[in-house]
Image 1 (tube, rainbow, N blue to C red):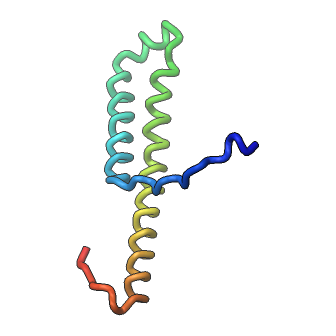
Image 2: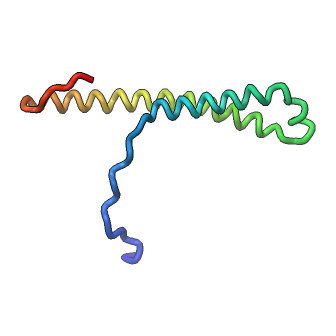
Image 3: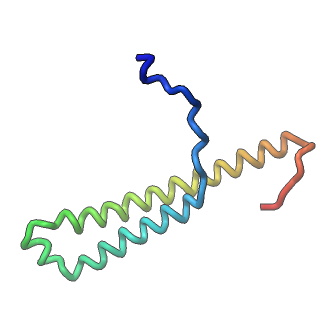
Length: 95
């Protein structure tokens, strides 16, 4: 098992515009769903209805993702504000 033990510590995760990324992805899934609606019968005749429902499921899961990352972002900001209040010598920055 020692063969698979990592030799280096894992790097910190990259933080970016997570809320915007998830929102953009959700919009793309929903637009793809809407674009497939006019071709509903074409997909049905060929047994490809899973394409339509995959796009709708992506949009639905994206809504859950938006809710999740917005709450996560708010919790991170609250934790940073609490940590800043506990350190009176730290400079206060307006966000």
